[in-house]
Length: 97
Image 1 (cartoon, one colour):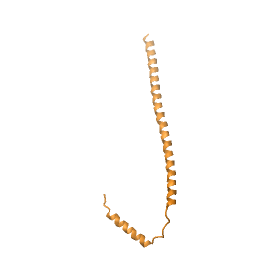
Image 2 (image 1 turned 30 degrees about the horizontal axis):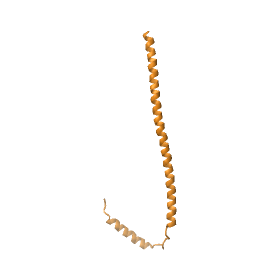
Image 3 (image 1 turned 180 degrees about the vertical axis):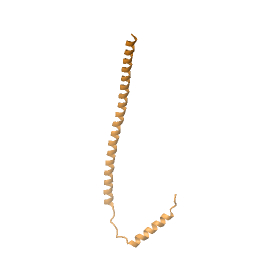
Image 4 (image 1 turned 120 degrees about the vertical axis):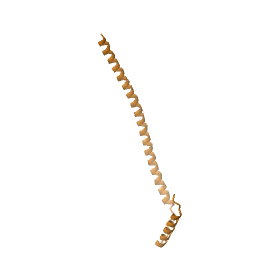
């Protein structure tokens, strides 16, 4: 008689444990799926932002090219060397950190 009661209790405990694991699994699946969908939405928004930034950069580049002053006469090589020396002198004056 005890054998029948013990086997029935074991079956019931096994069923309860299976249901508990199922409920925990479903709850975990819900939160993981929710986080995944939010991440997907964020990725789509970031891709949209990148596309808009590329468009803005192209527009800015066009504006800069349109407003760019005409180039002056080519600077002589000697004058460029003097300017570079002046720039190097200025670098020497800047204190190092």
